[in-house]
Image 1 (cartoon, rainbow, N blue to C red):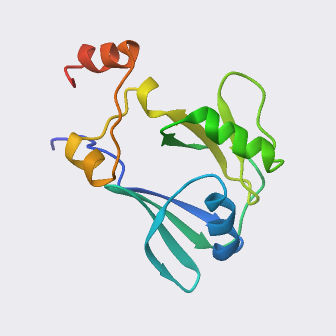
Image 2 (cartoon, one colour):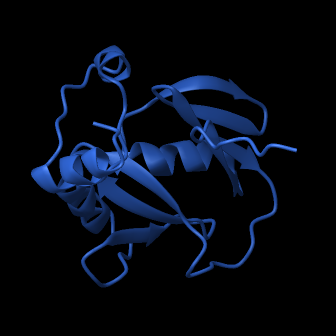
Amino acid sequence: MARNRLVGINHVALEVGDVEEALAFYGRFFEFSLRGHGPGDAFIDIGDQFLALTEGPTGPPDRARHFGLVVEDKEAVRKALEEAGVEIRPGRRLDFQDPWGNTVEVVQYDQVQFTKSDRVLSGMGLDLSKTPEALAELQEKNLA
């Protein structure tokens, strides 16, 4: 049987203790709109992807398990996290934990090989480019 190729990530789902508190927490650092919202869940729109927040049991923090968010300006997020008193893990990366133990890694769009089509970026109201290093990574894989 032939294996199917992975094409992308449609969404990431996080369990949080309280959806409204989670929306307020993430809303302090990221501008977003909701794709949907109901009792016990909310869906943060990220262009052609989304982040699902669901009320449920949360486990202890885990140093290795995490998900990455791509932003326009990583240093602006770092500053907002610092101003809010959120602990940032030491090192050159920008990793932090939300109040429910979910570890988030923040990366800047122009510095990573992750890319969105021009049409999706335009629909999101963004005009972003890539560093030469990120473009080289994409070109090496025939993706740019």
